[in-house]
Image 1 (tube, each protein chain N blue to C red):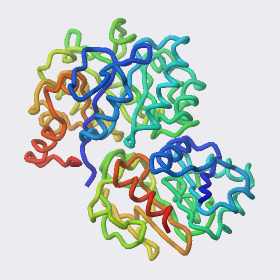
Image 2 (image 1 turned 30 degrees about the vertical axis):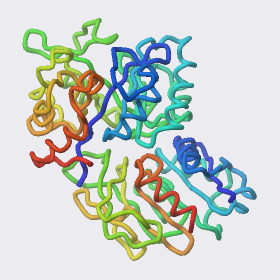
Image 3 (image 1 turned 180 degrees about the vertical axis):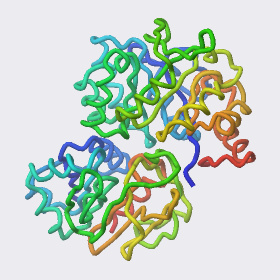
Image 4 (image 1 turned 90 degrees about the horizontal axis):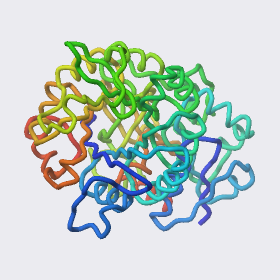
Length: 251
Length: 193
């Protein structure tokens, strides 16, 4: 049976992990490669690296980092953050990234999704969508959530699928950082509407939030950062709990 | 041991090479018919779309070379699918090593299938020290139906062939280079064939 995926997300700045990641077993908690290895051996199904500097000058640093990660870890990983050019995607995939994610660039130039999926295949194109509910309507936001748009979430999600995205990574800005659970109502609507997988992001605080996002939110995968980085949730323990709720996971 | 990884522009060639490195094996990327033919083992990777991948193989004049290889050959993901006669993806004529048709998933489940699924009914030295129902990482929208060359099965709406073998040709739908320790064991088994 295909299992539900648990995906730790690592924010990268200038080739280093940010946020106070704190594991006693790690020699250098700022080293993304060491952290990636730790997660790949601790039950993570995939990893996402989000480059939050993501300026042109930093692109070379990112490519170097992707190479080091690909050399070391034996599970799939996605790289995102400021990607807007075919040539960037080509370099990252050639260097060893399994998937790339695009966000703002796809909103500004939706045809980018068509061009990327035609060239590299849908399976490696993740479209990340940040959205916030305003006056009852989910609207997408750009630049890490800083810039609101008038684009409605579900119509954009459908368009993204039609243009050839292989997966959607949906972050609810209303839930992100709250540790109050994922946006399950919106997730379920999106997941049932689409034929491609949906990754839930934003709001993970405890184990039952993951159970809920798979059962109520119909998510195909769940992404989180701080609950894993601060050791609040151990991935193997989380998966055991999911199994008890008849949610298929890989242990 | 000389291990050739066929390089026709597929995205995951480096990942395959890195995985072999982790196992302590050196390999080389090549699109050169002579170098590929004289290797001890050949890995035929692939991600992406069938028609354009086949076009790239033809552009490198490898469509005659690959079916004539005599050493163990491992096709991965799209590599496995291209070893078949025909794929519904882009109405693509494949290399014809396996007399099989690659079909698109018709299911209520999500397509592409992305993630970790189980392999079962394992029947090949390729799976030495790998248990029944082990998890492997898969990403695909098209599949090879169960057939007489099937050496592993997976269920996704229907049971399909997640690994096939005929003579010296092996194909796996999953990505051993991304399937954690179990995938590494499979690669090692292939290299020790």
